[in-house]
Image 1: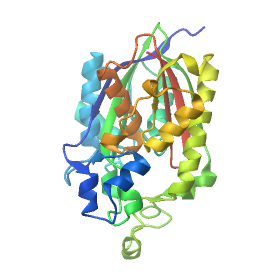
Image 2: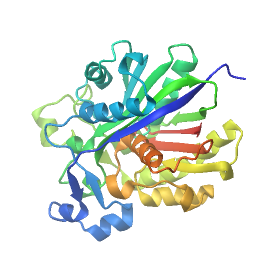
Image 3: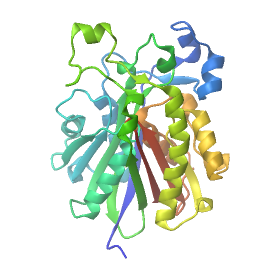
Image 4: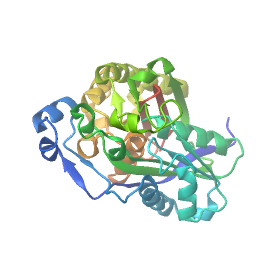
Length: 327
């Protein structure tokens, strides 16, 4: 038996005010609302203004989560920000968030695991607290993906959006995070990447001209990987915790594509009423996707007390991860 458990004490989220609809995109690239909706389920997404940064949304989501948890920033022992769009390469966005929150006691770091980032960070923070590193942690998934989109590439620019979600974790005697399962396959790294801007292709006139600083994705291969790995990761974590999929009260998958969500749900035998979906409103917000959905589910009363909540994500790396939580 464990001496203590790590529980989610509060959730929060923040998205930009600006809404970009499929009809807006019809005026920008050769696409249509029918094409985007039928293939992705996305109707609109939120887009940051030019002066808004990833840490801005992380701050608002974090403040909500702290308020919901009844925790002051000074009580935090750890801050982790999962993101692929940090304010800058260094310092870590988590350090900027610490500064803005006034969380002077917290250790801070960023986690970069693509769209799986929040699930990875949640796992690491849970083990940090349970291993004696502290009593309270803040885990945030935050993105401004619109800043790294090629708005001339209709295959990618229609998919992504901006926002942040956050949770506050704390030690307790009642069960909370029951199990997690993380994995990766670097052999698929080329399927989803941003080639330019770091040590392989440092920023230059040539990398800018070749549009190497934008998201590049092999959509078909990522789709096939996602459907398979969401099922595998979900089954594995539920089995690891000693439960069955029938006992899961709410399934919160990464919100990348409605067809991926529906395919994975069918394979798992999880009925649609037990699946949380908001991809139509926000598109793919990468590491912010799962925590935004978790916060919305919480605010909508979809999280049953003592119910089992299954989180699962996949993303660049290739990476994947799942977490089972007793709410």
